Image (cartoon, rainbow over all chains, first blue to last red; front, side, top):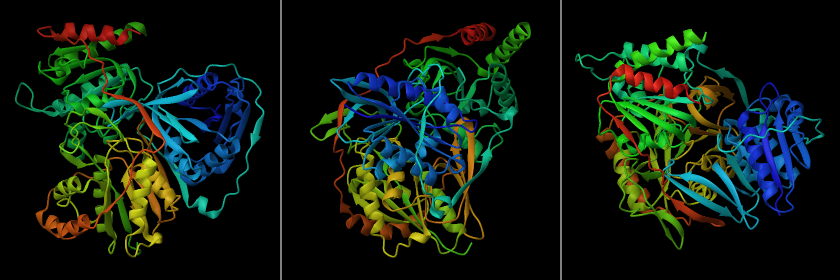
Length: 349
Length: 270
């Protein structure tokens, strides 16, 4: 028997992020798979009532909360205190939390405070003979492992897009508030704001269906012997506007931008996918001017359908990594593609 | 800004990203086939942390950078020959496995103990830097635990920038979802910063810096203490390479507008 704590923070509007509902789905399933295991919910944030009501029917034996203005900020000291108290109050042996940046920042530190062990980036949890096992990737998505732990509490952070989200009807939750006394030591850090690109420059969209990856080929000399970075920008931004795709980049391309070269002005290290970048999850991916060596493939590990446009027929994508490789000039294809998509959009409108 | 920092960078070594990796199972758990033969590099995120540390130390006179690294001595020596040429630092080496299959808590314990042995360490000046994740375990766990072990409870992850102010407080940019940054101010050291990529380019090799560093690196390697770092309580039921192999359709000699049409249809499909 295990006591399973679903742990999550609320957003500024008091709701739960989508990935939290996915983690709740995993926690619910885990509780049901191990005989006699109660599910407890632990929420923290500025306001938690709305979120608690939204998941009131999830079958939790208890809904615990740490709430108040001090917890509205995503700050290590106060978040770690809240998570620690929720873990202790619930007497959890297994803690399931979503892989938001806020939870990821504190979960490992808290695991030490409560003498537990932690696994992050968990993709799935299975149960055999009442023993849970987690699946996660090692060496930057280059090998996958199933692992079990004897230590408890065991804290797990579930990656987004790995489990169906909880979809129960809302209800009236009975929330038990857990009190914490905060001292000055908790308030040495203050969150002063969020820096976001202007809405028309927003290129990273984690919830998009499509990931568009641009490689360094966009900045190289073209058929006429000249580089056309401005034209490349127009093509790429045009495509993103028409499809609302998320933009990824190879390391070589963002490094060029970082060195101050006049390349793609909107591209930054935040866009980078692969070995030292993100490994996003999208239903589809379109790679352009990007070769397919191992570090790039790592960035595409969790993209379901993959297509690529590349002038090199022997590109790494041709070796069983993409579904389709178009041997063609990306400048030419994107010109036609954007025109087609714009036409379709006009017709739909 | 008057107070100099003691910046401790925790940085492991990982197999060169271009190497093909293959897992094998042994009595001590999984490891990499021919692990000692694989060329190693400084973990890329730890590298960013090291360069940011050196940059900050240059901006705040009197500051010092330590690189605390856990890995097999022979491999550490090999990697340090390159890393030493980048920026000035003092190495604190811990002789132990660099495997991604060891547990983050045990690695953190070994690193925290090594940090405590640094002579004259002043917590009020301490900044603990490292990569927010690694290219081996990739958990984003070790730094947080080190911070907790050393009693440092102002922590930041996915950091892209630190700006120190006149009053020794600093402003930090941390990556959050959707390509955004959270901006925070912290009253000052001590703090833990897990770095993303930052904004600095990789420094060029400087043989003079390399020679100066190597004078302290070799003795540090010689006196590196062995640490028992494993994965107690952790059982790997299976470790394997992803099997998914795609039946790739290579499309040659198709006109650009035909390709565009096909891609547009593909994008439009649910």
